[in-house]
Each structure stands twice: as structure tokens, then as C-alpha cells.
Amino acid sequence: MATDPRRSVPRVDHVLADNALESQRRLLGDPLVKAAVADALEQCRQGTIQPQDVVAAVLASLPADATGQRRVLNATGVIVHTNLGRAPLSAAATQALITAAGTTDVEFDLATGRRSTRGRGALDALAAAVPAAERVLVVNNGAAALSLAGHTLAFRREVVVARGELVEIGDGFRLPELLTASGVTLVEVGTTNRVRLGDYQEAIRDGTGFVLKVNPSNFVVTGFTSSVSVRELATLPAPLVVDIGSGLLQPHPRLPDEPDAETTLRDGASLVTASADKLLGGPQAGLVMGRADLVERLRRHPTARAFRVDKLTLAALEATLRGPRSPVARALDRTAGELLARARAVADLVGSPAEVEAVTSTAVVGGGGAPGVELTSAAVSIDERYTEALRAGSPAVVGHVRNGRILLDLIALEPADDRQLADAIAHVIGMQASEPRT
Ligand SMILES: *Cc1c(COP(=O)(O)O)cnc(C)c1O
Image 1 (cartoon, rainbow, N blue to C red):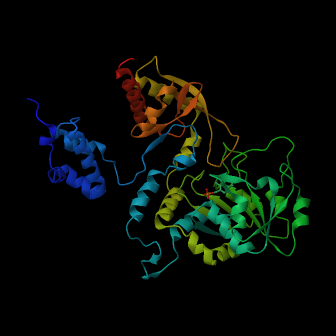
Image 2 (cartoon, helix red, strand yellow):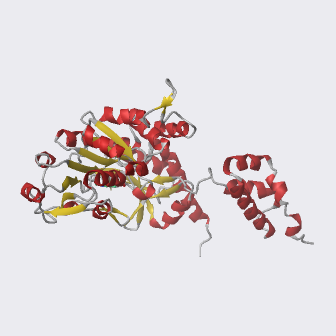
Image 3 (tube, rainbow, N blue to C red):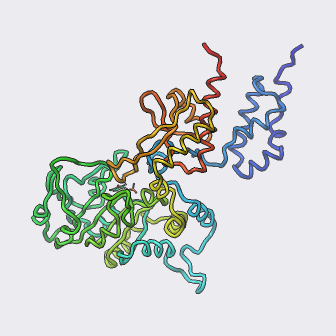
């Protein structure tokens, strides 16, 4: 006689009292664990799992932490991928986040017991990394830096900017609208492809707050083009704000055309703004660097408080600046030969020679940096029918589909991730192999 599975379904409180689940409740909180228990009990009621397997099923279904964000192996060949959270943090920055998660002296002088400058350590580290900056400020992101510059230096005044530099950053956000929303009137000069110093000279008048130069960081204009250099713009009778976007602090040999903060300030910019989570390889933040009087005005402006960064960001930024090379910097250093050797080793680890190929590929910086620069890289290539299964794994793997194949590019992965990548590939290929043929 078959027993009714419902009769042997364990009671919720019995399952929750299990030692292993107790510790998960302390780590993840009750709601997550209770929902997983309810799920497992429902499966038990339907007979798809046995009563004695309920706890194991709950443990297997629980996330590693209480966030819905899941770890992703970035095998896209885009080093700074905005949809995957831009720059991954270094181990040093990750450790700093843990320290900063508690109460800290972020704005307190432990020697005197008095209030102190918020995030002093991060500001000092940034100033040391960019000697040409008289003073620095850290805000929430690149857009906040620009908005604060607009509010402070050009509210109800004019900002002169080349028409070809009025870019859309992404997700529908456009720099001209951001600036206009900061109370600025834009005076566009030149045409989409060309602008000359004389165009700026004619546009500057008493009501000019500053001249803005934006690095078009996500596209290239080729052909009949001209723009005006920072050195030339610095001769104009108005402050010069340069949004370099990608956050290189010093020149990078592999990205010769990418502007950096140090050179831009030496060339005469009054202020440079940038993001911290692109080529700098740090947490999301906006950097403002340059003339002491202007930075100080931005810092004291009422809106600055609305753009203030938290202690986690300050800690991770400081550790990025002072610590070992960031994962983004390391990715930029990888050579084609080294990457191809890794791709071959991953293919060997997977061990399905008919399915898996190691190939050369082309990677990009991405995320608003070095547009048009192609980096020779290497990838593991498998049939594109595995794409969804790879995304569903843990960690999820996101690659780049091309000509019926999915390329799993190694440039943005640490060598320590290769084993997990191989396991993920072997898993999806194995899953397919074990499915009944139709
Ligand atoms: C990325 C970028 C921004 C926006 O910076 P966020 O940190 O994303 O706010 C602004 N300007 C340029 C040139 C950029 O490349």
C-alpha cells in the first residue's frame, strides 16, 4: 500500500530547528530561510523529494548571502562591463569594505577625540596619486562630480561646450540634460565633427561659468574631425573643467589616446572629473581634482552633501589607490600569449575535445574608456546553445555570442577563476549529454 506522502511531510518548526538551518537563519535572516523551507516542504508534499532530504534541499537552495545579487564570471571580453557592476574590487579593497562595515573613524580624529575631515585617508591617497592636483574631492559618481561643478561654478550662468562632446552616458542619461538640470545654460559651439579655438573665444562672455571639455569615452569620431586640446582651451579667459570619464590617473602605455588626470591638469585644466569604477578599478565614485579654490567651493556647496560618499566607498577607494594593482589594471596587462595558454588549459580541464576550442579573440576596455581600442585576447569557444545554462549556473557565466559559438573570454578573469570556468563549462556540457535525446 502506497503511503500518502503528505502524512510524512516534516513540520515547519522541526525543520527550522535543525542546527544547520539555525546558523543559516543567523546569517541570512528568517524570511529567506522560511521561504526556502516552505518551498522544500511543498516539494516533499508533491513527492519530488523525500522527507529526510528536506534540510539538504533547503541548504542547497539558500543563497551565499542575503543579497539577491549573484556572482558572475565576466567572460564577455569587456573589461569594465557596466551591466556587470563595472570594476571588480581588489582583495585589498574588499578587505577594506569589511573593516569599514563597522563603526570607524571615517570622520573622527582618534588622537584628539574631535571631528575630522571625512575620508582623509582616501583624499590623501588620491592627492598622492595625482601630484598635479592641488586639492581633491570624492563624490558619488562621475555624473555627480559634473553636476556639482555645474551647480557651484555655473548656476544660472553659461557653460561653453563643443557640440560633438554632448554625449549620452548610457541607460538614456545624457550629459547636456544633466548639466541643464544643474541650473546651467549650455552654449554649444562647433559642429558635430569639428570645433576650433575661435568658436570658444567667440562664445565666452561675462556670463560664462566655465568651459567644459568632455572625453567622448564610448565612441570615436573618425574622418573630417577636429577638436581643441586642453592646452589651447586653458588659454581661454574662463575656468576649464575636463570630464575625462574613465578615471586613468596617469598615462597608460596600452591606451595611448586615453586622457589621464595628471596630464590633463598639467596641460592647464582647472578641474578634472572622472569615475572611480572604470579604468581606476575602484568602487563607484566621482573624482574631482584640480585648483584648490575651485575644489573648495565645490566641497562647501550645499548640494555637495547630497552627493556625499559613504565610508564603504572611501575605504575601498583608499585601498584601491594604495594597495596592489587593481583587477582592471591587471586585465589590461595580460598578453595574448598568456591568455591563449590559459584558454588551452581551461579547454583541457573541461576534457570534451570535440565540444571545446581555445581561440584568439578581441576584447575591449568597455564601460566608457578607450573606445575603438581592440585588445588581442583568447577565449574558450563552445556551441551557443549552452549560453542560457551558463547564465543560470552558480557562479553565473556571461560570455559573448558570435557566429553560433559562445566565446568565454579570459581577459577580465583572474587566473584563479579558470578552474570555476572550466567546471561551469563541463557542467553545462554534461547536463546536455545526460538529457534524453528526442
Ligand atoms: C562614465 C562617464 C560619465 C558618467 O560617470 P558615472 O560615474 O557613470 O556617473 C560621465 N562622463 C564621461 C565622459 C564618462 O565616460
